[in-house]
Length: 364
Length: 198
Image 1 (cartoon, each protein chain N blue to C red):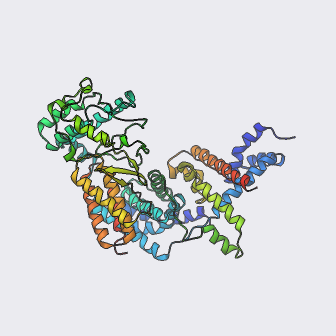
Image 2: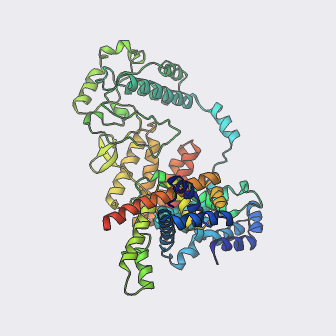
Image 3: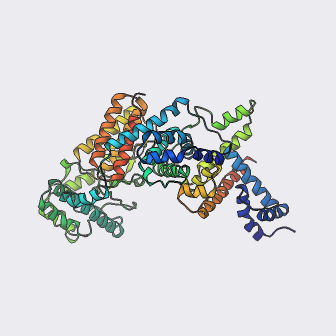
């Protein structure tokens, strides 16, 4: 008599457990009885066993002996290096630091959060709306400039901006939700998908291109945004004509010529991946130079967190490619500098790890 | 000696003492632990990441992280599963971060490991067997990280369900569920291959 399908269903788990040698005597007997009458299940067991055996037969090349003799030495060097440079971080110091931090940190953090709320609400409400009469960047500029000056009035100036008021509509056409990166965090794995339309290219603003901040700009409300603000509309129109629209410094990526990348200061910079060893030396040096330049000119750009990691990865690949001592030293120094700048302990650790990886090519 | 016996042997050989000293800051003791487990950790990462450079990075990071966290290791616990847990976390993070990781030939230039293994076993070559093994390898690589992690620890490391659970920080039931599902998925993929070749 053929076993019923229900029987086969209940036997499935026993088949898997049998592959792992997890059956007791009673269940072995039950399984054997079923398999004797069910060719389908018997074949399934054979396939599972064959697959497991096939997987185990896949061997791996043994690295050369010198790799193993150097492995532990490299680990210990990294431990000793990180022990020297690791800041004395503790929850207590972080807690104390939060309240002892200058107002600019609080203002920047609150401003970033407000931007998330505003843009998120805007996106949900106004998908596909045309460009705003006032560049959204002005709000960020206002906050950034206020934060940079670190004046007491800056916080007050920033405060109204951080109220949860809807931001002007931005030019977004069927784009995924905007992700704003707070300065202290980095989401390395969440760049937005390719944006096909040139009008949605992200531009990381330089300080020179920012429109002058006026009182009217600070008092922008949703209702008042139907008319261009004098002095700003032209700037925005020019940008729009150039096929570029102002978006928040969200760290979004756009399609560069060769896939995902970033737009920095008007130029495309390819995205670097530490696992992608196909980039040439010239390309890697180009990436490093562009990020360094952008970071130097825009020290408060939240996108810089991504830039630190990109530069670190580019230096790692360059060191790996060239095995040049100068590259190793230069890269390690720069990444250490970037690690010193960031507050987020996770990002700091990531950068210090990158530095250690760069330095692993020293003397090779 | 099977892997399970290997692990017990390692533990009997003074892991506890080395760990105790390492927790007190003795770097030489930790260095001894690194030497003891470096190959296991490296090959685990290599199975997951299929890239020598990536495996090297993750293996190095695993031990550095282990040193930093050695104070949290519970004396008497299984160091093997503990270090594997760190390695798996690092590997899964790496896979998450480098979504489009292209596996370079972790097995030397040119030929796959299976071709070399087959050549050694049978100088005349076993093309069909080598091709099947390649298919299995690709099928395993295409599993989601969560399923792949469980399958790798079971198939290659021959860990028990309980050890896998400890290494991944999940329940034994979840281990069984993911392992069985991973196998079913492999069968589906390999079944498609058989249909194509008939």
